Amino acid sequence: MSKPPSHEHGPGRTHGQTHEQGSDELTRFGVSIGSALLSRFDDLIGTQGYTNRSEAIRDLVRDRLVEESWDREDGNVVGVVALVYDHDMRQVGDRLTTIQHGHGEQVVSALHVHLDAHDCLEVVVMRGEGKGVREMANRLLSIKGVKHGRLLMTGLAD
Ligand code: NI
Image 1 (cartoon, helix red, strand yellow):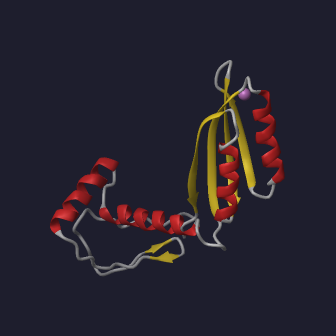
Image 2: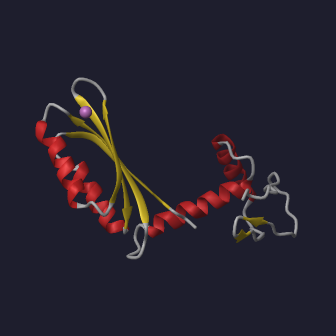
């Protein structure tokens, strides 16, 4: 089943109808905001490529909800660790693999890229409760021989 077409309007335009988007009914609401603050917001979302405020505001709300889900005990988050390590330090790859085997229920997928003769990139996708995913990410990132890495904290916001 295809999604119905969206009914978006440019900044400033509103009307009183609601539309179905998937299974979630859209609700329109008014926001009071200072003109200077709104002007800065419009400049920001313009540079980011948004064509209307609604989508920008929805993304802000989703971002905050995902962030909050990482601190909840019943949160179901998605974490992506990307790290670069020294291939010449043989034990690094073994430790990365051992930690992932020990948390098999959290690891969704892993990707390995041989960057050059000396460096490897490992990308590990994890799901689960935020605290456990964060702990595993920290264990991976703190291995001696890992030169650089980051945890991307994402998840389902709806
Ligand atoms: Ni490699």
